[in-house]
Image (cartoon, rainbow, N blue to C red; front, side):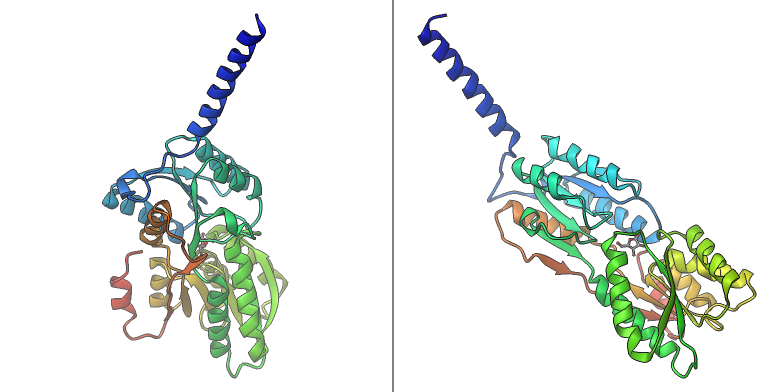
Length: 327
Ligand code: AHR
C-alpha cells in the first residue's frame, strides 16, 4: 500500500470510530422532549414489602398514564445485581433516563461516570447515595433523618412517665440510606427524654427477620419498654414475637414503625402498633416530571423531598384515613 493509500485508510478508520462513539451518546429531543420520548430504565431494589410493592406499582401505572416506556430491573436486594443492571441500562441504546433506587449508599462511582459518558440522564429516587452530585440531576425521596426524628419524639411521648426507657431498634439493610439516616434521626430526639437504645440489629426490612431477631433478644431479657421498627414489616415480626413471649404489643412494649402501609393501619386498628411514621412510596409522578425537565435542559434542585405525616393508634378517624389511602 502506498503512503497516501495508508493515510486515506487510517482517516476512514478513525472517522468510523469517532462516529460510532458519537452514536453511542443519546440522541437529544431537547428542548421539546415529550413523555413519549422517554425510555426509562428503573433499578428497583427488590420486593421486600408493602412499601416497595406500592412504589413499583406507582412507577408502572404512572408510566402507562404518561405514555413513556419503562424498562424495569429487579435487583433482588443484591447490590452486585443492581450495579450490573445499571451497567446494562448504560449500554442499552434505547434507554435515555436511568432511575436508580440504590440499595446502598456506596458502590456507584464507576457506573455513574459511565452513564454520564454515554449521555444518560440519571435521577436518584427513594434513597440517597454518598457524594457524586455531579452525576445525577436530582434526588427525589424522603428525609429519612426527619422520619427517624419523628419516631424518636413519638417514642418519648409514649414512654413519658416510664421509669425505664429501654428501646430496641430493628434496622433495615446495612448500608441503605433509609437505615443509616433513620437510626441517626431516632437517636437525636430519643436521647432528649433519656431513651437508651439497648439493642440494635439488622432485620433486612423483613417480617421473618424482625420476628427472629426480636425472639432472640427476648430470650436474653424482657427488660424492654419500646421497639422501633425502621419499617412496618420488621415491626410486624416484633409484634408476633412479643405475643408468643406472652407480652402485649403496644401495651407492655410500645411499638413505632416507619412507612404507614395498609398493614400498619390494620395493626393500629387491631391495637398492636402505637404509631407509624409515613414514608411516601408514590414517587413516580415527581421522578418522571423531573426526568423530562432535565432532558429539556432544566437545572433541578439536588434534592426534592417528599411530604410525610404521622399516624396514631388512638386517632378516632383512623379507619376513614386508612380507607382513603392507596397502599
Ligand atoms: O427506602 C425505603 C424503605 O425501603 C422502606 O421504608 C422499606 O420498607 C423499604 O423496603
